[in-house]
Amino acid sequence: MELEIKVMLNFIYKIKQWYQHQKLIKQGILLPIESYEQYTALVKEVKAKSIEKVFTNCYLLPAEIKRLISLKNFYQVKTEQGLAFADDEGGYYYLFLYVDMQKPLILLPLEKDILVENVYYDGRKTEIQCKFEEYVQNAGCVFVNTYNAITDRPQLKPEKYWKKLEIFYKSLAKEGKKITQPTEKQLKEFELVYRESIDKFVQKRYTKKERKKQRNLGYLHCIDDEKGNIYAIAICKVVHGGAIATLKDYQGGIYSPGLLMYTYKDYYESMPQEPEAQKEYMRSKGIGGWIAVDNIASWKIHKMMGMTATGKSMNQFVIKTTM
Image (cartoon, rainbow, N blue to C red):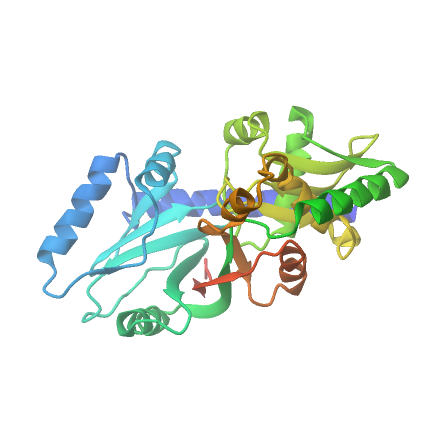
């Protein structure tokens, strides 16, 4: 009964939120971006009009912006100065700014929380990046967390990797569980585990069609039992840095580290045998994802694989909705 009430209240909340969203569009506070050309024209215009150099925290690639526009999840947010874009991630808005920081930023309240991020190199945060963080905090943003970028390639020796993976397989089998790709029927439960277990301001919004495509490409895995119940999920790093999540009652066990190992199975299967070639193959080629500085469990399992911080960090700032 309690669960049914919770589901009903959540449904009512989402309906109210949808109406608030439509109201903001009608008021011109949220302006849907309908083409990539419209987006680039707005950016060009604000740069041309600005006396000082425009600062931006937008690091999205054109392909991702085009994707958001095609899904009708990308908006211009009304502001008195500069330019603000909002990526609707379902539970929050991810805000990108193009601003002259000589002028104060005033953001009108939206129906969801607003996330602003600033990426920098550890120990080398520039003066303008420090100024930007102060700037958004003066506009009402509150610091919430810091994330560190991690290396993209495990350093665990192949013989140790295969031994650990075999132990993991045997442990799962004893519990009557296995690693598998989620079936299409399981995708709804897969998404629930993702939403319930991953921090809200890290979650990314994907359509059912996109999730099916990710599944078909082999990017999604889970641990389930013979009845199809899902206990943990894994999303490969090619999907926005990936994700590992375990149901609350099963956290702290073997599921998350085991799934992380499994996502690198293809990597180890393609490992060259010649020592010099192997050394080059295992050399980090870039960023493999982001981990919150206080996420001790995640750091532990990634360090088990020989993955470490890259020296690049990201601070998160949030404006909580008042609507």
